[in-house]
Length: 454
Image (cartoon, rainbow, N blue to C red; front, top):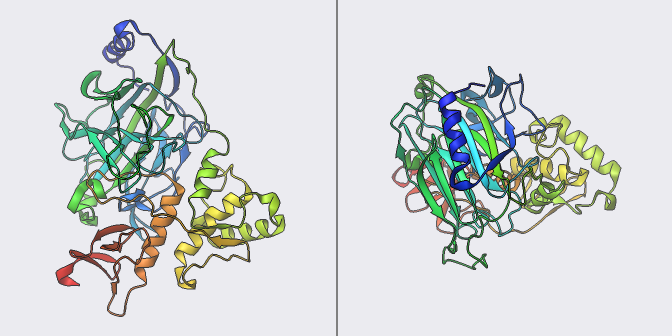
């Protein structure tokens, strides 16, 4: 870890400002040789983060490593499961979450076209409903060749009734990829301040209603949903909705010219007021992630309680599935985000991915030796705005994968009918896991195509 005396001094004064004393309650200085799995969990999937992104996230040390006192996330042109790039994404969802405090990231940005580094937080419990009703706190996001960064809050209601407010792109007076800088949020019951190198550049009051005015109001008091526990996410995405109309424009030739495709994090530190009722990390309940994941699956076992099912059937099914298609099981194996779930939950997660990939087995296929069933659900959270949500839920990952599989079952001329995937509205066209206007686009030979060329 690097020590900057000026930065530490300014940090000290910031933490004791207004006669309030903060204390460090959690940190990772990344001084070892590998990721501390007691603090972080890998996300391993190719679902595109809910934003039509171009990468697969892996747990490979080529993508996520701890080196020379820093976490290093590297974007690589690499063909994997139909995607042309790999990268890394980690979170504290299963280990720690916080309500209020100061969150500091010392980070150095990558430098390359269509690279999207992010430092952000998501709700642990989805108290107010699915994204974005339960909120999202984006502390730092950058379109990394533009030397800008921005901070955003998402809220208002479950998609499509969600809205967002934020700083918008802020041009920095320094080269974000040349050295480490401090990106922070100070979160209290009354406001969230966003800072760069201890200077506040955007403040959002929490003393107001965050309802969007659309659909049912999920909130009963001001400040909701930013009165709950949130966990930390660090990732480096490639392409996607953050780049608007250019979401899929990156070419391998452009990627080969990236000046620096590495996102460096020197440290992450969480502080809370010494008079706060919560001064220690608050882990998620041991089964909360699993319950949320299972509840969001379209295809799952007939019961979430493995004691109500045949232990032999569960074991044999998982052994066959993970042995034959290990790509569907990375999240439920040792070190995966759902590795601590029970046998029914783990099998359901992998089984759902299996049927999403092999949709040709028939509409509503979810049998798996008689232990699976289809569950009818509302549409998952999707967006096509430039400020598209970055979701970590297993349900969204599974449904995005299912959508991609659905659109490959195209008609004889290679054009997939619009709205084949259940998450799209009737006037929208599904393509590669996202929704587009059917008057502007079709999905031809597996790729988004302007309507004039369909």
